[in-house]
Structures are given as C-alpha cells and as structure tokens.
Length: 235
Image (cartoon, rainbow, N blue to C red; front, side, top):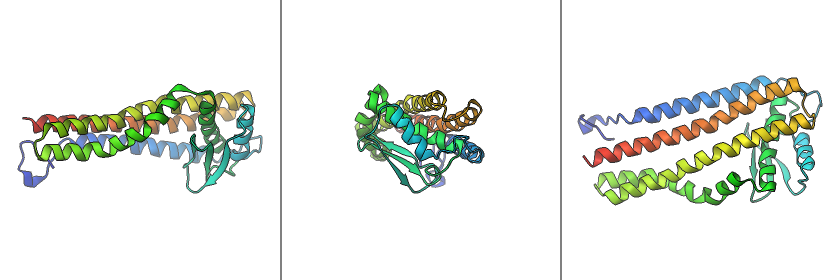
C-alpha cells in the first residue's frame, strides 16, 4: 500500500512484516492449545464427571446458583457471559469426562467467580469493552483515510482509537490468567481432579493463556505499524 523508496505500483509495504510476525505468533499459540487439548482430551478423569457436571459443582461450591450452564456448538468456543449469567460449554467440552474438558469448564467457572466477587480487572474490562471494540475496528481505516488525504488530525484519531483495542487486550491478560489460577485451585481443593490429573490440566490452561498473550502482542505490533505509517506520511 505504501512503498517507502519503491514505486507505488509495486504496492510494497515493509510494515507488513510486523503483521506477519503477529500472525505467526498467533498461529503458533493456537496450534499449541489445540495440540494440548487434543492430548489431554484422551485422559479421562477418575471422578467420571462430565465437564458440565464439574462446572455445576464448582459454581455451587462457591455459592453461585444464578448462573445457567448451556451447551453451544463448536470446539473450544467455551465462554462466560457476565451480563446474562450464562456459562457456555462447547460440544467438545460439555459431555466430555476428560481432564482437558473439565479444566476448560473450570476456567469459565473462574470467570463466574470473578463476576460474583467483583474482581476489578473483569469489571473494568466489561465497562470499557464496547468502546474499545469499536475503536479497534475503526482505528486503522481512519488512519488510512488520514494518510491518503494527508490530514494529521484523522491520523491521530485513528491511532488513539486503535490504542483502545490494545488496552482491552492487555486488560484481558490478568483476567484470563486469574480465571485459570482459580480453576486449578478449585479443582485441587475440591479433589475433582487428582494431583497427577492437575498437571495435565495446567498444561492445557497455560497453553490457552498463550493465545491471549499472542493476541495482545499482535495488537501491539499492529499499533507499532500504524505509528510507523503515520510517521512516514508526515515526511
């Protein structure tokens, strides 16, 4: 799109290297979590509980009775929706008795516990996420328009808006890692998993955590790319 020292017809933009680095990191993280889940999805928990049953026990152990557990389609599409008090477990998780599935379900329960106790980072994430999501989506297009028309205010607005997306990705990190820590602690204390089983479950959750690190890194690299493009547009 922007050729520094190259004819515009070549459409060469060296800043794409940053995008490629982010994409490779994200692909590696995604491949690792899928590999870890697949490995430990073959290991059945001695308790014989399904992930859905384990989730219900965990919630009740924390005095949480207003969260509905639902089954949704997909693989590893599990999530917790604070505004609706709904814990969604994917097809690959819901009825599975594997230590990987129980770990994933426990992680989502960790978010429900965060919600119940008013965990600060989760509350902050919920409050600013809508605005940050919009800013992240609009930031780069606005930057490009600003560069095409050599209009500095638009360039700055684009960078600021995209920075909101970077902010939410960074706030997400402690939320996700804290949910995993809560999950592992609860699984151990309640003896839903043995110590040996917890080792495998921890590997699955730590691999899953890397996907959020990769997402944050990718956002930061994209912001760096925007700053470079903005700087060159002013030269």
